[in-house]
Length: 143
Image (cartoon, rainbow, N blue to C red; front, side, top):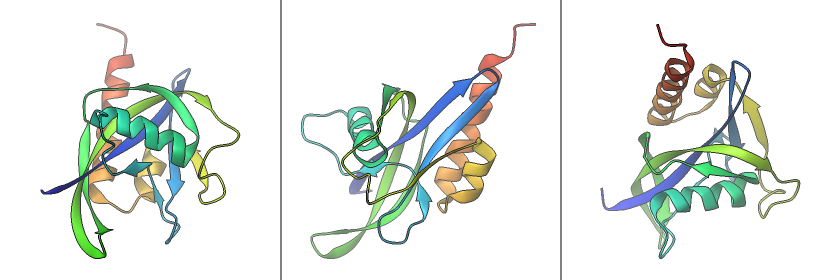
């Protein structure tokens, strides 16, 4: 696919609980994750981390490995284009009280199954469920 964007999947863990951070899109107010166009001289995972701060007000450790992707229609230079959006997990370490798009979006922490139910894109839903499975598997004590 010619056009690419990069997204963060912000998450946090406490005890045995995994939570995913979702934000609303600006226009349609649908639940999604922070995403944006590539940033010059930034790796895709760095772009995802920057978008997480700008759109959701979170900072943390972003994984360099893409965990999934979904397709999204975007407008670029006044025409509609189909983008492949690569998803990178971001373990949230700090949540800001103020951030650049605070007054344009809402944010919510939810369990992965709830996040998957709330998002619109099938590829994003799949990435959330796969991510939850990996997190649960990695937390199980060795046999």
